[in-house]
Image 1 (cartoon, rainbow, N blue to C red):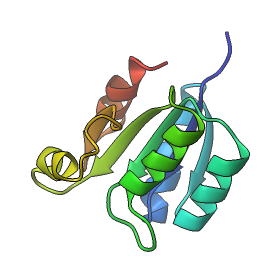
Image 2 (image 1 turned 120 degrees about the horizontal axis):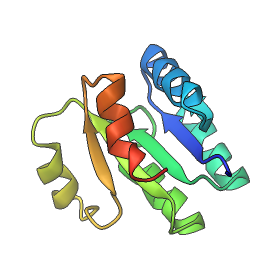
Image 3 (image 1 turned 180 degrees about the horizontal axis):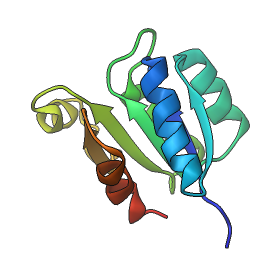
Image 4 (image 1 turned 30 degrees about the vertical axis):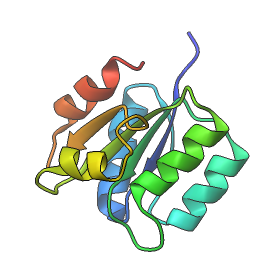
Length: 121
């Protein structure tokens, strides 16, 4: 079985590393960064099966990174991670609903994370 590749981007470095560790333990191949510019470089260099993006980050938003990853590979499944209330409405207002494959609400535990992306594995 081919392992799925996942890009995790969150400006909270501890959260980013924690999510990456959970996913790697489940057998995914994971790239993790807390820097939006590094995320853009990774998106330009590689194709990912799944992307997990923090909604609000310095320099670039998760939605902007999703636009870039989908432009390179439209079949990449992209998720927003956010603790903001009413994030669904915010995504809708940004006309990004068609790009976002799911929302992972913070705080979350490993079971909730794996359930959310599990259908994409």
